[in-house]
Image (cartoon, rainbow, N blue to C red; front, side, top):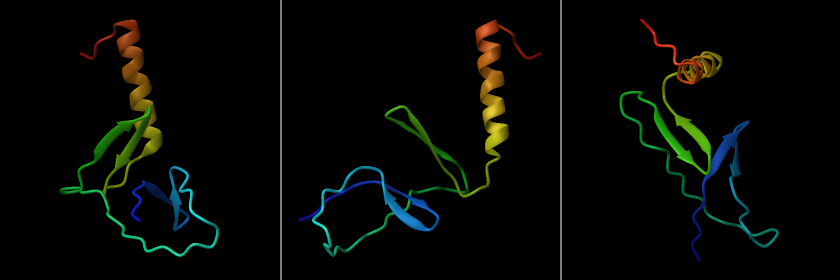
Length: 82
């Protein structure tokens, strides 16, 4: 039997993003496929209302959030950068 699911690495442990419904104590083999990324570019994927950023380059999350807020404020208030 083969099951496919997505998982996230948290504190160096693989955490499934959905229930696996496996019997307790079952032993399984795991194949890991990392997302493709070219030249360190970020890949943005929106699924179920969640924005996932996969990148090989560091991201300043606080700055990203501030930039998003500033852009939303410009759109809401009709302010343009000049």
